[in-house]
Length: 254
Image (cartoon, one colour):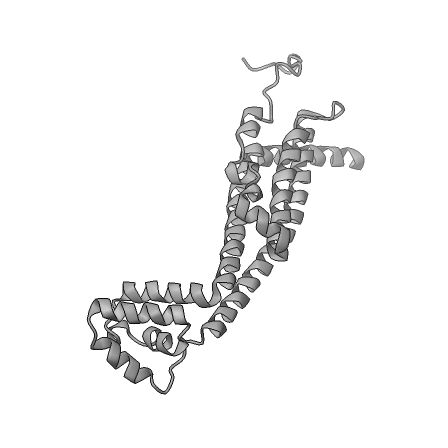
C-alpha cells in the first residue's frame, strides 16, 4: 500500500533489509584455476624454481589468487559507519583498482612469455637446420623408391644418427615426394625435433602451460567479479547517488 504524504516509511533494521552483497554468490565465485594453487603441480613448481619466465607467471597467478581471496574476506568486514550501498560501492572501487593493477602486471608477464616462446621457436628452427642441401633431390627420390617399412626405417635411423641432411630432405616440400603420408611426416618431424632440440621444446611446453594457466585464471576472475558486483545493482546505486548529489547541490544554491 502506498504511503500518504504525512505517513512515514517504516524503519528497516539491518536484519530486515535485503542484503546488497550475496554472500552465497561470493562463496561460490571462482573456479579451480582462480582458487587453486596451480603452480604446485610438479612440472610447473620445478620450472618456477629455475626459469625466470615461469617464475614471473607464477607470481602473477599468485597475485590473482591471493588478491581474490583477500577481496572475499574484505567483503565480510563492512564499515558500520557506512550504509550497505556505500560499503558495496567502496569495495567495488577497491576491486576495480586492484584488477587494473594486477591485469597490468599479468599482461606484462604474459607478453614476456609470448616473446620467449617466439625466441625458443626461432632457436629450434636454427638447431634443426631444415633446409635443402645439394643431395636433397637424390635422397627424396631414393626414399620414394623404397617400401613403406624400409622408408620409415631409413628416416628413423637418420633421426637417431642426427643426420640433418636426410631429415631436411624428408621434411621440406610436399610429403608425397618422399612417399610418406602427412601423418608419418608429422611424426618424423616431432621425433627429429625432440632428438635435436629436446631441451628447447621442453622449455617451450612448460612456458605455454604457464601462459594457458594464467589465461584460464583470468577467464574465471572476470565472471567471478561480475557475480559479486552485479552490473545492474551497481548501476542502480550509481544512479541513486547521482540523483542524491543533484538534490544536495541544489541546497547549496538556495
